[in-house]
Image (cartoon, rainbow, N blue to C red; front, side, top):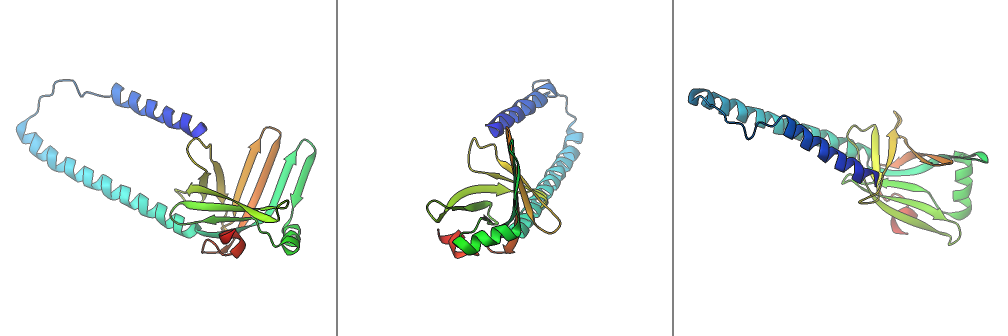
Length: 192
């Protein structure tokens, strides 16, 4: 819902900017000689703009390729009105050893991904597919679809992804460490 409101606000701002500076309907006097030089500089500006856009897309693709892979939960901190509970890496590994279930985050370079979380009642893993994107390689946004507010994550210098979910009186912070450059590294995270 927030993304839809943000998108609508961007459209309104763009329309206001276009309309306030718009001289589309004002009569223009054009010097034929100036038009010829203007056309070539305009064409160059358009070419420069397209080249700049391609560079940005290439950078974004490079960042996505760098982040692509399988990440596994390293630690988790839950804070609510009852206090703070922490799952350390050792505690998580004990859970994996006891159940065989892993909590993973898989990022494909095409902008799709999967979160696989243990379901202790069914003794299987639950999966959620999502879309993700990064523009700088230091942050990413994960969204499950249209109308989804999305989750923001940060990438530290060691390549670990931190995702924090704040909801009224609760906060969950999860840190995922990369275990492979390929999505689907664990059979339970790629086949369940």
